Length: 148
Image 1 (spheres, rainbow, N blue to C red):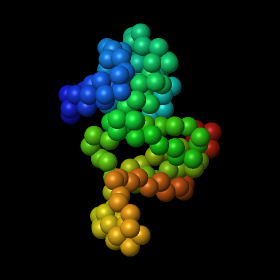
Image 2: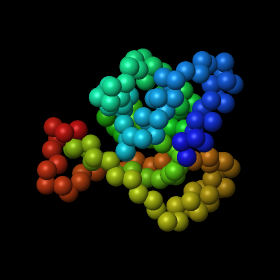
Image 3: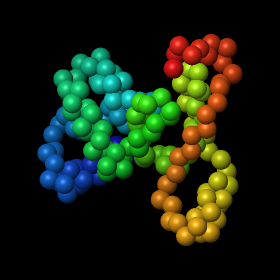
Image 4: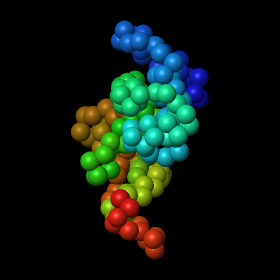
């Protein structure tokens, strides 16, 4: 999966006359290895903790490029923070977002593709992908507004 992403990213960088650097591919690897949704600062700190020398600016800029070439999706879950997730495995899915602690749970709804296809046909729209965010409160006893 990663080699396909590396090839896709390399082609994208060439097509836009962007520099192809080892640091950009280090960010790609870190982003694809990250479990769950992550912000740019979270990824940067994770990389620094792993002894990376990549700059914060390189992380931010590379994440934007990875979104542009559709390897990553940028999400905002209502907290004014951009978070990223990989598009390689699960392109269409939904999110439950706890408004107290910020917990995010992914799930898939069987039959939703058919419903959206019908809506798209009725409204003369061509859907390429989707992601739904459903906001509420989780039932975790340790859920705390201070964690979000």
